[in-house]
Length: 576
Image 1 (spheres, rainbow, N blue to C red):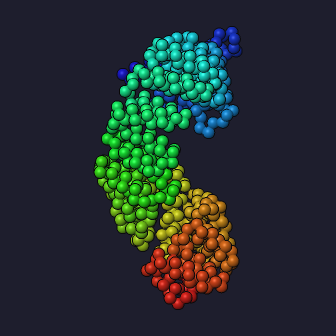
Image 2 (image 1 turned 90 degrees about the vertical axis):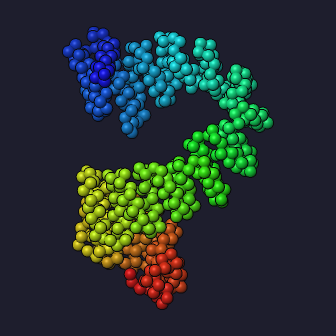
């Protein structure tokens, strides 16, 4: 059956191609070339049916080059230009010009003229869009979709009166509908004709006085015009006819929010979330909007937790609720709580690769590397080819000082990575270099860093890590400075990159510059590692009391660090 449909499509396209030809004496293209172009055009369309879009474009371009006067070929060539990636305004105009050739030759073609009109509307030519759709309506009278497009085109060109007249014609033939009324009201609002807008809505409401959607729409229109009492009257009517409609609570909540009534707003939010007729996605949208509003106020009280509790009680097996709760807790810096909620989400939806990735990252943030590895292994059962997860496993082994397992895992990822994906391969090899560095295998560490930069010379991670490796050992410091500078230039807000830049100057004994950059790094992130480095630099600039103060702050977050313990206890600097 599919083969028959494909053949039918090709035959139809052949007819279109024939219809698009101009008379032979109006152009200087031989009959043989005309037929050749039509044949190639059909081949192109056949490739399009098979989703081979590159071949489609190449064949279409070839056909157009042979016979640029075939308007059907020109039309689809124009469409291609409009749909090209990173297309420019000039290319779009070229595309429109090609499409126009076919429109002028065959304005009655339903699909082509409709698309031509839409394209003109999107590219800011409403008058041409209107001309095209008007002409198409003349060839295809009483087609609902075309009349609706005509009404929209009138509105987009600013002729709201004709737009509404067209909508009236549609209603006379096909009957009144909320979509028609809504469009007419939008036109009246654009004309600043509030009386006509309200009259139009009343007319629709009169057809079904107990329709809750119509009453909500009537309420919204009154609210738009600042008539709150009337707005609440129709909202109350809607609730009377449909007491379980959660959207009524949402509308009421928005009214209270606009009026600055936070108590009324929160009560309606609660009512909406507990409404049985409101679907889960809508409830999550409500809650997300409320969370954003509260976070903007820096209000993270128990009210949001209570709302999540209510939702979970209603829908205990909805993974999306637990996932949103996890994201909220993470925003509140409750990483453990975020991990707990994410685990519930993954119990319900264990194939969620993004959820597993977040679970791994959250555990790594808590230094729970064993749990992170377990989560990765579980995730890989459902996503065996996920290279990101394998990369996280390697990173966890590195942090756990199981360097052999880290190298083995990195090698596994490398084997599975596309040989042409130089950026990813460079990142993997950088990780291997970091691991060999921790193993004090200088030869292999340098070999990995060099290879990573050959594959991707602008890999900022490799540049930074190699620079830090050299600075720690006090070798090739000028090159280390250049690499660290490139990394900072690529990501100027990265505290670790700035720390490396400062540490290179520290190794060069340029303590003033080292202090300048360390201050910038600590302003961005008070990581224990950065605080320790800050203290070291302060010590060598003579600010020894402040140095001890920074070491003490670092020790508070890393109490088992023996080197920091000695620095704080003896109030003196020791090399790493």
